[in-house]
Length: 331
Image (cartoon, rainbow, N blue to C red; front, side):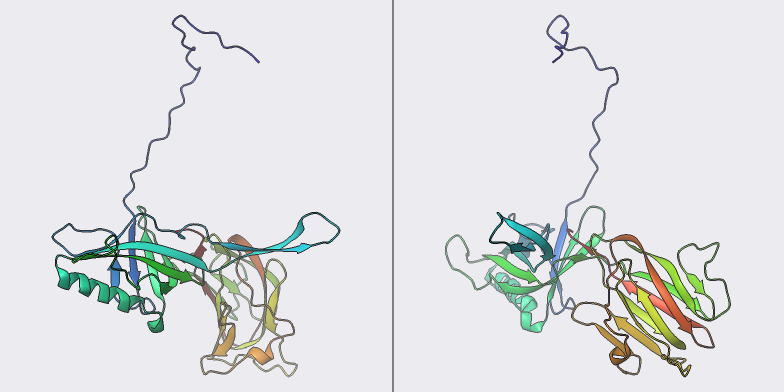
């Protein structure tokens, strides 16, 4: 090991090039609020307390469950081998705990604060939405259901004449955060223009009349995890097939008699979201029985990916539109 040469006084020689440390970025405090009744009720701020002259609900230090989602691991054990063999992992429901302090200028105001909060969080009235806004002013949303923590305690450390403390327990069955932005792309076809535009390499794409076989389109998901899209197909369309980057697919084969699967003027909505998984048009007709065998309503992976589109358009211009909300692992 080389021994550094010390100058007089015991100091090391200066480095050949001085490396400057990074400068801190100015960053505002995090804003947090909660809104009940499926996100349509009153938005109750949990930060930004105005001072002792004003009643308010204050979020205390000690909140948990707001960073990485929890995961469940699946593995196979063998009686002849040590350990196990990992198979898969899945994110499970996120458990959140928010310690809050209800401050009233008198007994009446603290009771009003408690009533507002309890009424907003009642899960029989719907889920509540936690909103987080960091210093970059980009909001993130988490949908939760109230589970417990506001049953109340009159212990000297938990309540007083003009104040009250709770540890609100929430469960987010979808453990991911969402943003305000909705990613949208649209393609038109049947108008005789070239399939790929020289000036717009990604969106929108113009598809030619007739069969478009095995054409790849680029989708970009800015989130941290896969997103579940909603496809809208505006007729006339005789048949279609959408295939994911890893080979999963769904579609309806064009009938042999040449009729339109989606008539002119009708819109088929394919909702791939878990808990929905529907194919219905704007008049309520169910298209699920018409799907080809073994359909998979696949998600869009994070980042850029290419999917394959096969379209059999009708006689006039038609459209395909995809929209989705990116999902994030942390706020």
